[in-house]
Image (cartoon, rainbow, N blue to C red):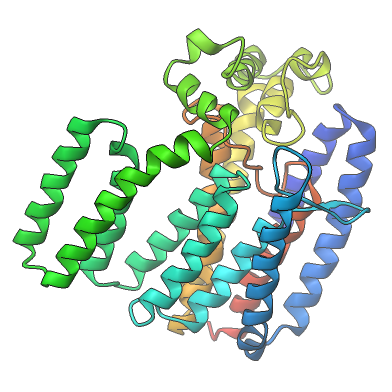
Length: 377
């Protein structure tokens, strides 16, 4: 697993070299530090540390997520540590893995949900829509795996439906009736029915308020542009439009290393971070893009193999949480580059430029390897 991750990182660094040599040298230092730090965790980490570190990491994460809201920039995601900018939301990956190890969500649903809600709100209001939804995606999948009560899953599912239906009164009313019908068919307890119905109404009311008062104009514009990209290709959909040009211009074998014009002449924004996949496809074509996807796919399969072999239920939840974050990163970044999803500002694992996600990616990877080491298989 480490070999594949290192190969991906090296490919990413080589591509960053064609964009900005100074950033490439920084990325090399991030990679060395991340691998060394991850290896120390692999060698010396113990199960007892999970319980010992959970609350310190929880409080640290929440404090840092609050502090970034006082940043003078428009996008409050990073804290300046002088030698690199740290993104506190990345800590939530480790935090959730620790939490789902310690607490089975089917037994501690409200405690776990409260922590998830706090993280979601703090990250959403940075604003960082992509990462906020990663919290929801991973948590929902763990809830499902842990056999959380079907009424709870229904509650969560219709909370999400309420968000998307709140802008259309007919769709909202129809979804509301479906919720009532499902509660009746499932013969849900009265308190579950009332809670799910009131929550659905509350979310339906609060979502438009968040849309117009919390989300930044550029975030709203990205979502609208995604629905009609051709009309916005010179403005809000510019990134996705240029990414499509870069990928398409690479054809089968690409233009050649360091010969891509989209990145070289700054037509492709964030070519070293969110759109590094498009940059690679321009240089190496379909073959290069397919090779990257294949490597990541194999890496995730290797991780899932560890998960399937682990017998301890707590370690299974721990491992699955980390793997789900990798899966989310893979799906979201590639989908954005291919214009399947609107731009979300989510890095490609092990490849995009940045110290925070590089460090946390390798910590998560070595933690999965640690699980393999301590498990008997």
